[in-house]
Length: 364
Image (cartoon, rainbow, N blue to C red; front, side, top):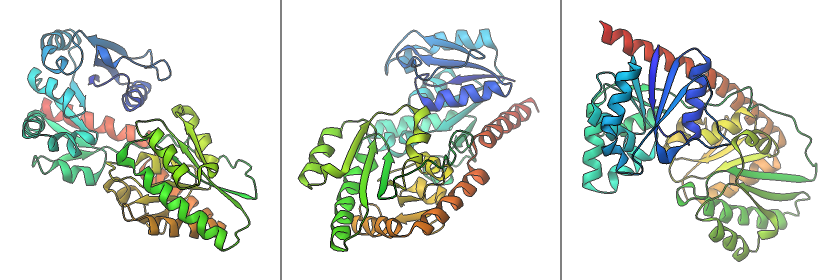
C-alpha cells in the first residue's frame, strides 16, 4: 500500500500519523509546503520520504499544483490522504487526483468557513471534490454535514497508552495540584479556569481546608501575559505556576503529577488533552464543548460543566479536591474508556482498514 500524505510536516498530528503508519508497513510519502518543515523535536521516521513543495504560505496552496502533479506521477500512490480541509484541501481539489481521503482537523470546519463567504465556498468545494472524508469525532462529523451529505469515516486521534499511563508518582500529601496542558489561546477558556480557581481558594480558606491547592498551567500562547496579569489581579499568583511550553514527550510525566486535570475550552473538535489525562488515570473536569462531550463520560470519568460557568467549574473542582476516592474512581474509569475507544494503536489500524476499503472499492 502506497500513500501520499499531504499535510504540514511541522505538526505533531502529522508526525504521529506518518510515523505510526510507516511502522505498520504502509509506504508513506509525506508532501508538505516548504514553510511547514519538520521540527527538530518531532522528527519524521526515516521509513517514510518527505518532499517539500517550492511555493510557501497561502499562495502555495494554488501555485504548487504542477509540482504536486509531478510528484504524484513519480510516486504513483494508491491513495492521497489529505489533512486539513482548507489549505491542503484546496491544493488537493485543484490537483483533482482520483482517490482522496480528506481528514478534517477542527478549525478548518469550525472557524474557517465562518470567517467570510468566500472561505465558506472554498470549504464547500474542497469537501465536494474529496472522494472520501474523515473526522476525528462524531460531533465534528455533524459539523461537516452542514456542508456536505457525504458519509464520513470516524478516525479518532487517540493516545499511545504505552506512553500515557498511570506512573503512580509519589505526591505530596499536603498538596492538591489542578493542572492543564494547552496553548494559551482564547478558545481554550483558561481565564475561566483562573476565575474558578480563585473561588476554590476562597472556599478552601473559609472551610479551613488543611492542604495547599495549586494550579499548574503548561503551554505558551498569545494570552500568556494577560493570564499572568489576571492571576495577579485575582491575588492568586502565588498559587499559580505558569510552566511554559512542554515537549509532547514530557506531557505524560507532567499530567501524572496532577491530582485533577481541568480543560474549560470554549471549542474542541475532539478533546485529546482530556484523553491523555484519562489514560494516566487522572480525573478530568471539562467544559461541554463538542469534543469533550464525546470523549468524556459525565460523572464516570470526571465532570462535564457548561462553558464559561465558573461557579459550576469551581464546585466540581472543590468536590474532587475533598474526595480522594472519587478522584481515583474517575481516574480508573477514564483509563478503561481510553483503552476501549482511544488507544492509538487501534486508531492507526482503523485508518489502515479505511485505506484498504477505499483502495479496494476504487479497484472494483
